[in-house]
Image (tube, rainbow, N blue to C red; front, side):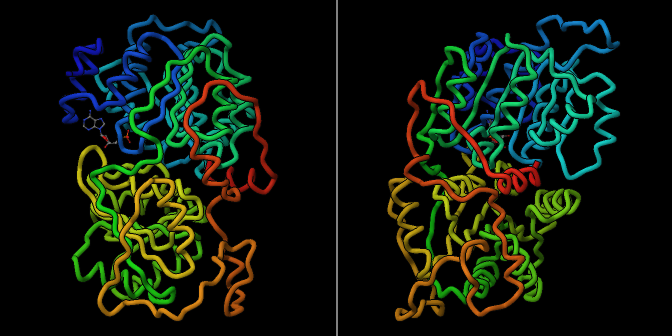
Length: 448
Ligand code: AMP
């Protein structure tokens, strides 16, 4: 099947062809006609499946073929499409894609997120914006200051909606929904279905078309997964060894905590391996700088926490390393989804110590696959070591009593939800739910 059979305009087909896409991916084959038909959509797609183009291409088609509505009080037409994403990086990435796919159309796109000055955003909002890509917190800041109007939104996209809920954005989302016109098209994309998502979908979507291209909790076949057993105190040494031994040149490393990320960067730098970290305590400019360097190949190792790295698309990323296993098994799927994207092959290596065997078992249960345990010569773990509770920086007292542990906070804004709960498949209907604590709300805001 080709893009032209999907009914998209020549300008859009020209842009995707120039991008090197020859045929639509499975999610695009299903989502594009569904969105073009004007229906609401509930779509589950594995990471890296091409879902961004799945909603962007028909959105661009719709907006460019309909006559834009005039807002009598403004010299510009109003904002007609709103795309909400959980993180700043994802917002930037999605907006870049929208701009690229729409480069032969006369539509203006804007991205807004927190962590940067609000003033340039205010200036842009005074001009023409047809499609707005935003994180919820900063969008509400603009709403509060009266600098954005959402009363003419025709299409709403919630990208990675499951993640937005995990990050505690439910109240922000509900507030934003209350500002939109009732008559609109809603597209909700998720990677993992949960009860919270079911409740949101039930209240938001009107007779949606449902798409699930691949089981949400499966890992891509293109990713080779390896698990190396190692002593907890020798992980940094093993990582350095692997990077050197195999000449890994572009490695995305996940740590559980911000403190762990910074500590690892220091250690790698001491070993003359160039590394930078992205996490919630870094300024937006530091995050953007690190990401740019990593994407253009001038940074060998990027160390990230789950929240910061969510949704990153770095083309043909060859190596992902789980320096720590994630507390939430679904994060394993999201993490390793950074490699092996769009058919390219990749390798995901997990360094697992005795404390993490239960986490590994939970991951294996979720993905329905046993991951063979290996040990690298010279790094065989001591078989007599006893497991210790995993430090997440909040609930546990640190081993060794260093005061520094205060900074040892996780980058996850909410306590992990049960894996079993969130691994459910789609069932239509459900009750409304969703609250979050003040603390989780505050931390979620930091990412917005
Ligand atoms: P996404 O899941 O939207 O983040 O997309 C993952 C990657 O797939 C991105 O690098 C896209 O540029 C790429 N991609 C999207 N659609 C296609 C397609 N039809 N053919 C080839 N690559 C694609």
